[in-house]
Image 1 (cartoon, rainbow, N blue to C red):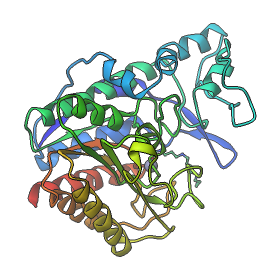
Image 2 (image 1 turned 90 degrees about the vertical axis):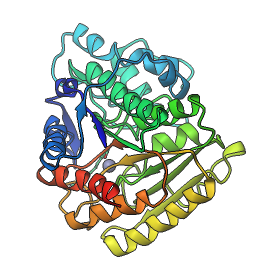
Image 3 (image 1 turned 30 degrees about the horizontal axis):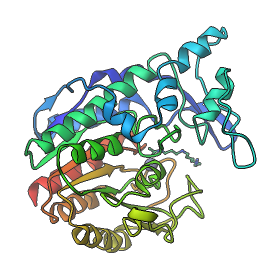
Length: 343
Ligand code: SP5
Ligand code: ZN
């Protein structure tokens, strides 16, 4: 399959994050994308191609104008205060506070447009986000043009970003933009299958009231795990989207047996929905060695996941999301793609 990659991700580097009460280097590192790219080449998965440049019209259909306008300005506003390093929010408009008056100050805006402190800005962030968006759309355009499969090697990831907020290392929701693009290219129904360890709260929120894009998530139970405030099994969609959201939360310690059973349930729901294309939010933080996650999948398990997805027989765009066991991320992520190709 064809692989889309941009070196511009590398400017999103040097960020810190809050972890267990300490400021530490962000787990979401440039080396993640480089190791995946090296593995793609090592196994000969297919040609690695640069993205085309897309305008933000599709992104504007899944994100708010105020939010999309803020992203390119955030770090310059931070620097205008005489600051350097990592721009990070610390105050958020939860229910009970006002959302109708966007602040004019950078610290207020960072929180206004975020649900956690985990999507942080450095000087190269916007350019990397913009390139990641182009990578996803280039992959989607290949699928719309008739390719059976493509891999959008996106970085930064996207599935935690909602219509009006960043979070969890995510800014533009690449998978949501790709799904929306496929809809605009005449595919009447699109499914998103999110296999990242964390619930894809942003993707779910964006499509929750829509019947044309199904969103299916396999993830760690939000009772115990980030993002905590979405991803329960009783979330089924709303209005025209009633029944088009499916959540399959799984306990800490889940291994391949229980995971494959849940995946089979997810795949059956997708087959029932009858989409014309599939977008896979591909996170491999389900790996047993992941430093921030608690599932127990092992490297030999990943090709079987790809093979099972291939069984749907759908044009399929893989969009890279999480995975923080950097030394294993190449084998694990590319293992899914090899399994898909071999099936
Ligand atoms: C795209 C993606 O995978 N984003 C994940 C963001 C997770 N951020 C919060 C993780 C909190 C982990 N705390 C674990 C403590 C163990 N040292
Ligand atoms: Zn994740």
